[in-house]
Image (cartoon, rainbow, N blue to C red; front, side):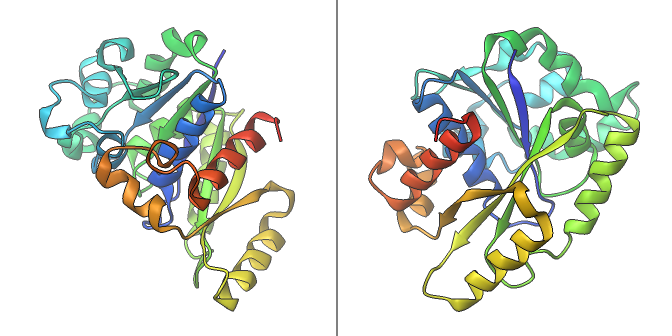
Length: 253
């Protein structure tokens, strides 16, 4: 049965979607059959894997709102073992539309049940908010991966996220755990990066991954070509870092 990991941080610009795309791609590259769910209305994970959200007639929206099966909206990516449940811009109004639905926090969990045996990993790219779609993701997942950028105010707002996790554990998903904390956008030339790393490690202890994702031009360029970085430039520092992360997650270090 697949391990379901939500990549979440309500703070924008922390490398959340970059992590969801490239972690999924690297898991697939090391032989793990992986499904990536794009639940962000910006649909950046969808476009980052080479799909035009404007051209998609079905998406995660139709799963959450119309009860469509996940398997009916899943598309194959350029990597053999990586599939995608895309998002399109219909998702913008989904949270408002979902407020009137019964058991609205469980829509995604219910949708995932029929496909969990088909994959080793299911990764959910959450919106940069703590709304109803993120709540669905936290209810549906086994664990949450929290990306934190190596910049000033890195820990700002995390209290709210941790509070939400606690509320979900108490009311909706007792088994929810923190999968790990991932430090992103490290610039070794800047001394502040080292201070932030120490601060995050002090706060989260052993939950911080050994892998740290560097600032990398190739990593930034890859989405505009509709590719994960391992298909855009496998020798780049960004590709190597996400491959190390995939190995750390699977225990194949």
